[in-house]
Image (cartoon, rainbow, N blue to C red; front, side, top):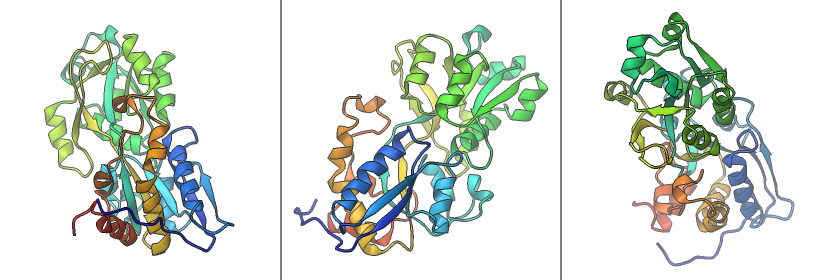
Length: 329
C-alpha cells in the first residue's frame, strides 16, 4: 500500500441517483454509508437519492446501463460476468456493455436446497427415484430475479425442473425475496426450498428446529453447471448450524458488485472508489457485532480483493487501485 495521500475532493456539487435493494437488506445500508462519505467531500449542495428495487434485481444494472441511475449494487458477482455478452439471465435484456465496477464487496453466500425430514431422503437421486410430489419454494425465475434464475438452473441440472416436478404432482411455490420464500416453508405452504442468504435467522431457525434438512448438490449437476457462466461449487461447512454435522455442497452465490456507467466522470468515480476503500472501517463497524462468517457483509474488507471484480473496472477506479498498490500494472 502506498503512503497516505490527501483525501480527494470535488468542489462542485454533485447529485447521484442510486439503486439499492428492496429497502431492508444490505445494499441500502452500503449506499447510505458510501454516499454520505462522498457528499462530505463534494460541494455543499450535493445530495443523493437511493431508490428501491422494482423487481428481483435486474432493475439495478438496467438502470445503470440506461443512464437512469449512477450507482447500483448486484449479487452474485459471478453472474455479472454474463452481462457484457448478454448470456445467461441477461439473454432477455441483451448485452449491457456500459456497466463498469468500482469494487467487489465480500459476502460469503450459497444457494442451497433443503427438504422436510418427513420424506426421509438424503439425496437428489432419492427424490428422482421416488418422484416425490414436492412443493418447492423458490424465488420466481421471471427474467428479473437473479436468485430465481440460479435456483431454477440448479434444480434443472438435478432433473427437478418445474415441468418435471409438476408431472409428479408437485409444484414450484413462488415469491421474490429470500425471507418471503423461506416463510413459505415456515407456514407449511412448501415442503422444500432453494434459496440463498444462508447467514440469516430465517435459514438458521428452519435448520436448527429441524423443519428442513439440507441436501448437497450432485457432482454431475455441478459439472453441468460449471460449463455455464457464473456457476461455481462452494460449501456450507459442518457445524455452521448446530444441527448439521456434515459439509453441504452448494452453488456459490457470493459477493456484491458496485456498478456505475462507463460514462461516469473520472473525478466522481475516483472519489467514490476512494471512499469505498479508505472509509471501509465505518461500514465494517456496522457489522462487527456479527461473527464475520455469519455476517451478511464479510469483513474485514481487503482492498486487493475489492479491486478484483468480475466485470471491467471503471478506468478511474482502476487508476485508484493501481496508484495505491492494490492492483498490479
